[in-house]
Amino acid sequence: MPIWEWMRDKSSWSKAMAMALLVGSITAGIVNGMPKSDNLTVFRIADFLGGPGNNLFLILTNFLIIGWAWRKRLRSIISLTLKLDFFVWVVVQGTKLIHFGPWTRRPNGGAGGFPSGHATHAFGMAFLLTLFFPRFSWVWYGLAAAISWSRVETDWHSGFQVTAGILFGVVIVCVLVGQWLKHPESYIVKNTGDGYMDKVPTSQVPDAK
Image (tube, rainbow, N blue to C red; front, side, top):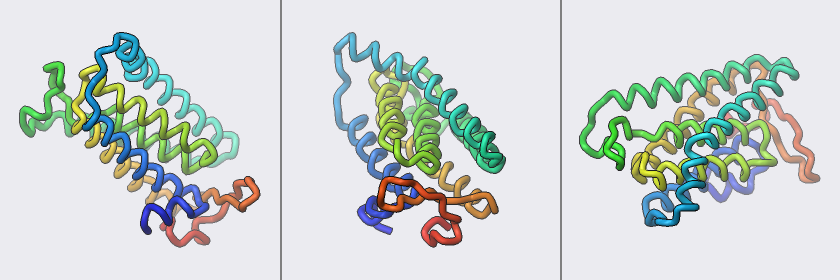
């Protein structure tokens, strides 16, 4: 389905996918095409976003999804969230152990620059958040984009490494969500047109499987 059709579709699955492609592409364009700022204030903002800000985003959003799923007794969603955390760590850290070439080094000279784990986890979590809380999709993806940009601004990653991280995150979460959609508890949030988000079983949403 083309991105413009995804954007018009009212299901949270389509919205999460469209936003991943749109915001991911914009973020990749910014980190690869925009020069770094020499402004100290901008650097401090980026340093916060890439450090405490990133930690707060991941911790609070994990608590948000897991706490909500716990109250709803949706154990499969708790499992899905923890699987995302686990597989992001395994895939990113495993890839960092492979020495592909000098381009995998960080701009500041350190090792383990490819891919950006911050971008991977942030975009993976933004996808998951949009799937269950689609009303706030621009908040989730906006924060993921800001965290990803911060890694280039503070010299922890190159634009290419961040772009790779975005792709890693989207692929990992799509694989995991694709498996979850086969679970009996799975559903897609669908907009009924009057602002009310209705839960629709995935069997009624052909593009979700």
